[in-house]
View 1 (cartoon, rainbow, N blue to C red):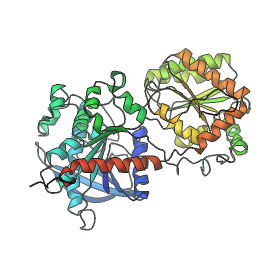
View 2: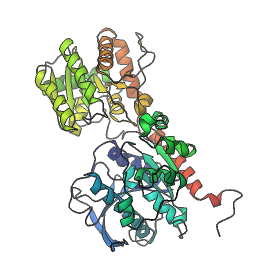
View 3: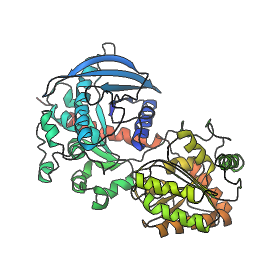
View 4: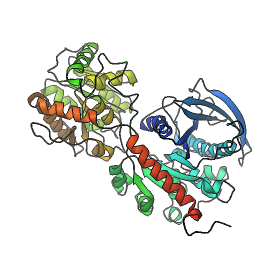
Length: 498
């Protein structure tokens, strides 16, 4: 099976969040499972040390566009980078503003289609053509590709290429794209429900409407997207594609996030040895943060984007209340919206004897926090999947999360018993400071008074399989279903197309 991933970012080359992590890890896992997965992303100017391969032309209404292809291999995965003036040339930014990003990613979808043609004619494989069986599209940036594949369905070879549309964040959709679609000569989208609901110029809706299969990144979030609170105006389209829609939980790269072999840790450990070998990481972290080194003082962490989606607006007053009343320490790491950044950063200034906030992101430092902190806060208003809570459990740091999306799928709520017969963390529901603060106090009480329960939950979380292995099996089946849907004429009892 041959799968081409088309996306806007990929770790470690360019990354703003979970999408980049997924594109940097899922294709690796698929290739290890025998699937010929490859990746194509834009060639932003920040990407260096890749090899030039060829230049080809993309027919456009305004005249042919010249596209250069560079390539490298990342852990056995061929990765292709497409560059073309004016949209992907010297701009180092991944995302800019709506009226620039919309036409540049429309053009990127056209670039990908022309690139597939170059692949099949052997331009990059020493003359051996490579037709993907499926193009795996991610978020609105590649939402036009399923429609372009649909339009090309009568061409030799194109009628066999299926498409899968994966929704990582429904909030961002690429709306109001009609003028740019017209300018690029894109034919009218004649799908009846897109027309009825006025979604013909919404790039994510186009992808959802025309892809052979559609999915999102956790089972619980798949259910949430059927309703207005999370459907962001496209819930009716989710219902319309219900039979072709599913949720597959993301995984993490178990090689990169491995406390037993992490070179950034003071002391490496695993589920067998963490009781003795994890505490030195907390002591080292407290020392590095210039906080009192005390194993009995709970160290609370928050790592991630500082945005309203992540619940930072109600987390800040809750954290301040806990710091005011409890003997705890706090470390925060992340960047995001300016107003929330300011409020988040002020915590470290106002409670300088017990709190540190860093308005940046640093991957090695984040791993050191996962290994040294006792509790990780993930108070998201909505979270399609989330990776921090999985990484935290892998490192023996208990997550405290709001009940939404993938956080429900990945964090089992503590049963409040002395031995923790169930649980890998703590959950709360209401999006308000009091609910978060109350749950933190519950966790603190457990830390101080039920150490056996705490250690049991740590071990349980560390022993869970957070890798892509379960997801690879599900994606293999979903790819097969999408390919069968595309090649319907090959089903038993069906005659081939004339």
